[in-house]
Length: 97
Image 1 (cartoon, rainbow, N blue to C red):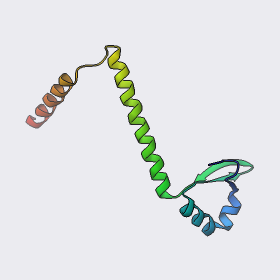
Image 2 (cartoon, rainbow, N blue to C red):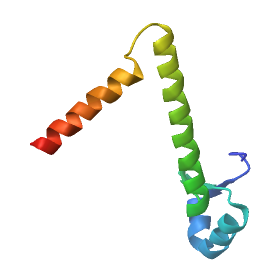
Image 3 (cartoon, helix red, strand yellow):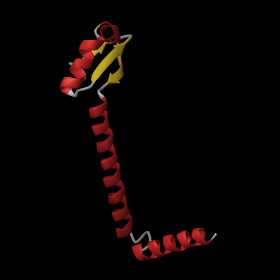
Image 4 (cartoon, rainbow, N blue to C red):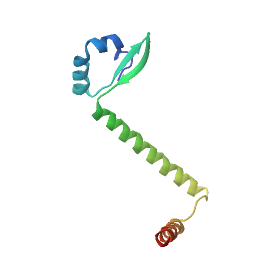
């Protein structure tokens, strides 16, 4: 997406909403709306927004795993068996309460 090419005035969006919605559904590309001469709002269809959220979540997970691996390389953290045993004890304690 080229922000400079895909910028439209909010006024145009209001006047031609149906056409913009058709474009959003057809292309899956967001539309940037300009207010007072500045790009202020991004409008996109729900399907492409969900894909964006899924991608962001995947990247966050990858980063968390990478950080965990780096932490283990530095000797930080606890062995998985120890963590699972601790979780099991907590769950059993709650079940008995």
